[in-house]
Image (tube, rainbow, N blue to C red):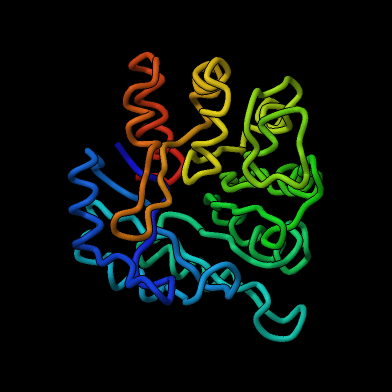
Length: 273
């Protein structure tokens, strides 16, 4: 299996985080062959940065298994002066396999963010997108994000986190980060999947796992229906962290074809690994 969302290094003040050796030992226990590792280059959400340069250094001896992503803060320099393209292109030349995690505390369709999307569009690479009340802010229904999907067709946008996955249901409660209960028809996630071939999603963290397990009848059908767009992921970032998605996906009532797509083949395609 390929885990498309993990972290390395210290991100939280009260936890030392993961070294490559600790991450690899955990992967071996879970039956995970490779993992896509996030860079963190913005101050939102977490206590510390793990920069792309640090990530390239930490993963260099393990590139057969640990695949780094790159990131920048689009708010660098005076407005309109920052040019992320040459930086991101250089990181890709050094071994990165995409962009992420996008954790910027701006609206998802802010012009400064669009500079990053433009660069990734030119490079034809994927972006892992986190959505919540502050990071990549958007209205219920993800209308701003839809404009980005429509504009930057060469980018493979990977939806993740609470405000993305709550849109799996048609009756979104804007006050709920992790909704419970039955999934009703009309969810925007499926509508966007149908409309935009450049949209994917990872099943990581409480948001992804919660979205596909909140309604036991709906979840397996959703996995089968969108087996070409979904990717196994955990968001593992500290020793001892619970990752129930691992056992869930192994036991899910999926065909071998669907299981292979979700746990490996989609990641190979999206990140070219």
